[in-house]
Length: 297
Image (cartoon, rainbow, N blue to C red; front, side):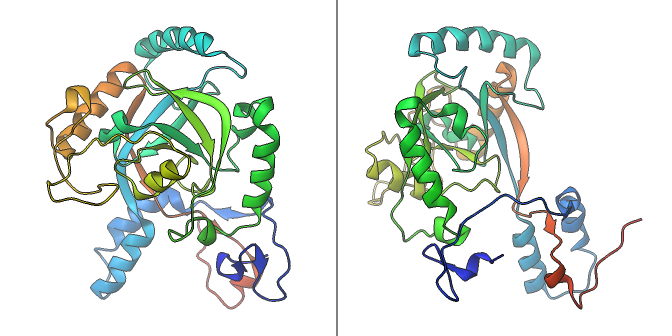
């Protein structure tokens, strides 16, 4: 077993042996269940502020929303997807957002629900359980090959901002719940299965990684936050009023977030949510030698 730092260009740092990512059955401590308590506890310990800040960033609490994108059944045509979505939408208005999204939906976590009008495509991690379901026969060989290539990369390599974005189209589409537009679903290794839900709504106008991906694959780019007049960059990640966003236009970011979450809650297609960067603690015997492990009663 290798750490992310020990994998370079798909090979082990020592010996340059090919690396493959495999699922393993392992013991984990569900430390994520205590994330809020760990954060609150930092105010009670006599540690230097720099250490407490490091811990807060490591736990990485963020607030945002969970949003459901309808994907329907495998093999549905565009017309069938539209018809099925209309029926599903009516059911969701009555039932509200369920705890389990089911197989008809791709659920994403986003810290910027206010940018939903600018979501022009979706990306799922190569390890996402829906890859098989979403991949059409025409795209299957390309997707399988891409999954094999991604399995040889470390998480650090996959999220390296300096590297050109790669990906492959699944052949399937999802419905954006805010404007009912069908958007393509891609598989790309810059999305990690270990963060959020392993799927993202891509908003290239407001996210640098999504912008780079959209440019590589010629995907639409819609700005949803108005940049300053002197802004000459690509994706704009700063503050500003909402644009190209229907009933959100003119609202500042915080107000737009509240309004869009209220709307999604009303349609049963989303709700406010909290997420953490913190991951459950893996018990590895070599890593535990000589260390004190807390006992839980």
